[in-house]
Image (tube, rainbow, N blue to C red; front, side):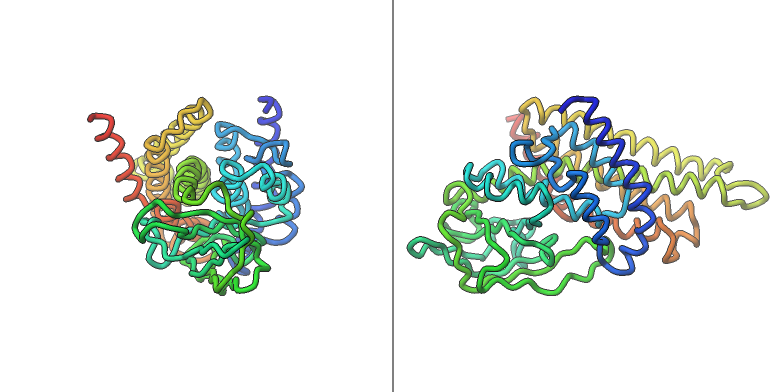
Length: 380
């Protein structure tokens, strides 16, 4: 994209987040839903398709442009970003990178416009950090496949129109080979979405279980080739970790701003608490970590755009930024003191929201394994 266009879009989204999303954060928290008006405005701005190429109706942002947008999206309640993220990210990217041209033409314009919400159905009760252990099966039967199984913690499942479903078409449980990916329509007979999950935080970022009982999927619903699903999942998850890292930076910036404002306004011992060096130390630590996270995400995104699909550096970004966010959130509560522990105060809610980033799309421990294995492999 033209650099001026990117700056214009990023600026518009930043203002939209601050002017229209932030005032509704308590409403999202109370209702567990992103208001329909915000969803409509996001669709009009093209936010359901910022990473989808222009020929399929999206904005066509490169990774280095996307992370700048994600810094702004991350500044608000994570539920707003979550509403958009899977369309642009792990689910939409499977279709974009591994689907046929016919599948891209059929699905991506609907996804980019927000007409269709798509979910990424990989995780199962016994297959989270170890997706090769998934139990869901897809059996070929003439001109279609029959899917049986259950998925867990599936983001946007309550609202999804389409599911990118990973199922075993061959091989043994525990093996990455034999896993395939399919596009499955919500209206398919035998597909049932469970009630929305009740979570610690990130209310409004909906997730649920999804059950498949003899769900018939046309053969042209297979994405790519049989057995290619695991590779597809790992590639898009690696890319998605840069986006999640950028979201963490945006949310950390928000927590720091909340901390600064409180430190300037809250007085103790006759003066603002921001004048005390121990409070200043916490602010300085948070700023330094926010700056480090932003810098590493921008560098890794530029490398990705240059064709260096580097799983290790993407994992470094996701690991550092999600852990950094938790530290910044903890300091924000500490700076607020007792007020920071009270419902209705932004940092209390954001503290709960922040905790999930160290878990989903690859736990911190999985990122450590990816990083260490890459280091040892390079040394060998």
